[in-house]
Image 1 (tube, rainbow, N blue to C red):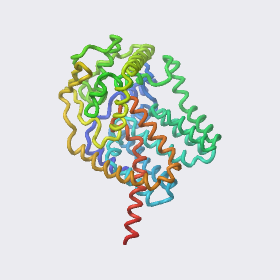
Image 2 (tube, one colour):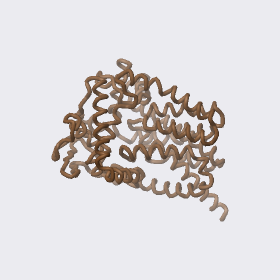
Image 3 (cartoon, rainbow, N blue to C red):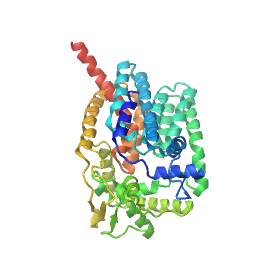
Image 4 (cartoon, helix red, strand yellow):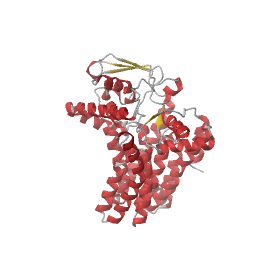
Length: 429
């Protein structure tokens, strides 16, 4: 309840939209039982979050507040799992309580618990996985960890490398049976979705990967962050696919916001909407090919961009720092320059609500890491999660919201640091 109360409170006072592509996929699940957009079967999206939305709408109709409350309740379970994880790794009940309280009140997590997107669900699944995997001394426990990880991959395919990393950790630690159990169970959960995608159009991975790779590694990507999201380059990517080469400079893109503003304005993005699943795969392949061609042609610049992406992933300000509106205009100029118009800065209260808690928590977390420096091997699953997210969003592109599912690692170490401070203060008195 302590974690749910701030989320319900924020739900009551916020006016964020709850729609977008996931909502449209949930529509198709309710109407014809398939993962599709506008009647075209798609392999672009993972199934678990649309299934959650469809189930919520089946029970509650389109009563958005009830669905958002249900999502907030699922996210709140993360506080319980984080308590158990911290208690298991530290053996200190006070540190466990502090970690749960931080999770309950941390503004970034509270906000994303009630907005459209898979991050709240993914966060809870990853904390449950981390707790189970850290205690996977038997094949049965490792199998349960495989359940949580398999569900996490069905929520966000980008966490799939975590499977390989965790199996590797188990093998290094001399736990081959646990490694095998984890791999078998997680693969069994994910494989029906992979088989479905392959039967649909021969793909295995989500077919939006090429798009994200292109807009995160194009000649204009470096000019977007940290002020603007590379998502604004989606129409540019579509034009590049249409011409099989990047469009000319001075090409103006209008009224683009990937999910929220587009839906609010009743506007559909000027995408090359695939008319068949095979065409969807072909578009993904073209974008992937162009992205790797640009990376190969500019290795030094791309390496520098990846290093900056890592920094932006942990930036103390919200990334992106400016808001995309329906009237936002993007002008692509020569030499990779971008001019974005009608894109105001985020409100000061939003910046402060993120930056101040983040700075306090990261200071405590660095102290916590130092305190556990001789026991970091016990935390190896947590570091595998961090490595997965950092590498994925360095390869594609970062945003503050992408850090939500792994933020519990920061809160874990912050709780350790705060617990030590409280202990020292008590000893001094």
